[in-house]
Length: 278
Image 1: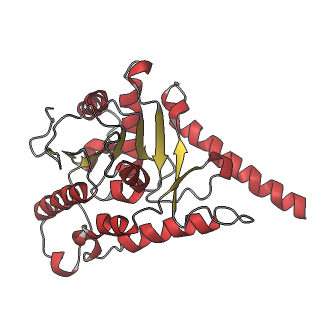
Image 2: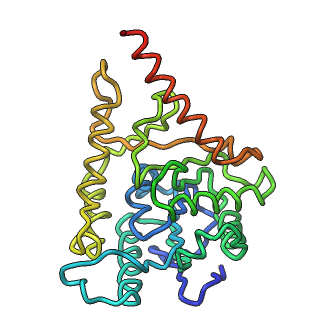
């Protein structure tokens, strides 16, 4: 399909260029966000004949912190390297496709960004995925929240029957462990730990550049699994959390009010427990 920006790229690891076979679609802000937040669907599709994962990275990779051998790299140098790393991850994860849309963060964060919304809508239509994953509205990274909002706008621009059956928002720059247990979409990420490590390990520009996302991401999954149920034996040794936002997408509710309801529910749970034990 045609991509809007001249530096955008589409990578198809196995050479088959059809997006329509996608069953699981992840739309994320930056190179490596997909591998941090969507390992569960990646590994669920891994090597399957009837399930296929497609990743979409919205930004161009500029502005990343850097040190060590990358300290003197220009922003343009980093954009090239990060795009290569993202495609390497797609190869390792056996994705059906990896699209990199190459928007600057400023365009993503703009409330009115019709080119991006239209492009996301076209991608969603082309993929025909059953489930779409994106960032969560309680994330503390502005660009992550902006991507989630742009995805919601794109989905709402589609007729209901052309939207994915389920939309799940995932954790990156803020864990979702604060959600009440009944509101968590808990996903088993324990399979193929070697692939999990490899997918994160390709991002040398981030790891050697000063951010150990590889250790932090796997550590969070291990912690999620252990601390999920206080009185039960663990079902998994690795777990990621998401929030189902399908109802938000299929309504005209304000995103801020939607997430506030979950925050209020968490606050009420804390207050009720303290009152009970006081």
